[in-house]
Amino acid sequence: MALVATFAVGACGAGSTPSTSVGGATASPGAGAPSSAPLSGEIAISGSSTVQPITQTVAEMFNEEHPDVAITVDGPGTGDGFKLFCAGDIDIADASRAIKDEEAKLCADNGVEYVELKVAIDGMSILTSIKDATGVTCLSFADLYALVGPESEGSDSWSDGQAIATALGSKTTLPNVSLEISGPGEESGTYDYFVEKIVTPFTAARGQDPKAGTRKDYNSNPNDNVIIEGIAGTDTSLGWVGYAFAQENTDKVKHFAVDKGDGKCVEPTAETIASNEYPLARDLFIYVDKQKAADNEALAGFAAFYLADGTIASANAEVGYIDLAPDVLAASRAAWDGR
Image 1 (cartoon, rainbow, N blue to C red):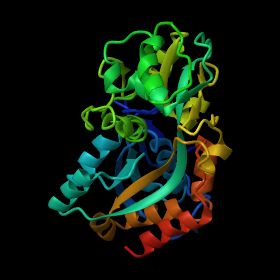
Image 2 (spheres, helix red, strand yellow):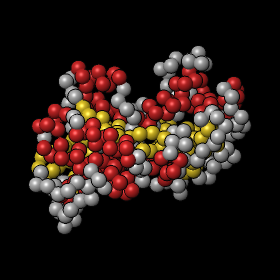
Image 3 (tube, helix red, strand yellow):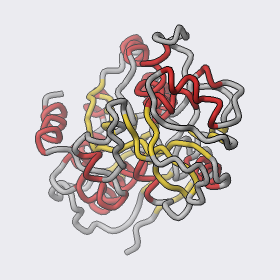
């Protein structure tokens, strides 16, 4: 029997897949938790488009054992997911960053208690077109700040960032070619991560507002497919998305190596991301509403299945994410069991 999936046309957020409702068909054994009595009910999941493909894959695996559980998985962005989660509107929030203090306060104010569970590792890829004409192979954090930080507002050439990059210690020669930037918008956890790792560390030192974020005049979009097309469309482009999604599009875009400031340029690979040698490696999370899990046997079963032996490894292998170290995955399981 074929697995049934209904794809709803709508905003897919920062990600590559539309919102998806999974439900219905075969009861063959899954690759995760052992089979148990069939469950029924509904589970609503939203948030990071980076995490969405993992959760979608796990949902499909879970439905092989529990076809009567209707699971919707949407990917409007980490921030949008936390708004829904902390309002009590969804059961699980997918997140490509840890919850912020103000989001945690919103959850607390609304009586939403949750369990934070790490599920995988991804990297953030800094990209240009496969037809790259910049001549640059490695970009430092200082270069990226000079090109995308708040001080670069209005500049339209790579070389316009040279003075700032040099002042911050960069040795890169930025070319005198046009600069077209495509990346996620402020609703995205990938945007937040870019700001946290690259922009904010320089803003105070440069006398800028630490909450300024990036320049506002670039092509931002909540859909990774659109971002990739924007990067691919100009041979002197610059942009960023998650590593796994970038790897699916290496016929259109190419990676820059990244230097965090120590003079060492590191290419993003599964190995350098897993080891944290690549300076833009990051953890991926799901957040589960504790009370909803207590009231919804299907939700509790799904969360346990997500963390079970074989489930995460199978899902990550299918969508191209990197497994957690065994002790980190064990900590996620302990957090869930101790909820």
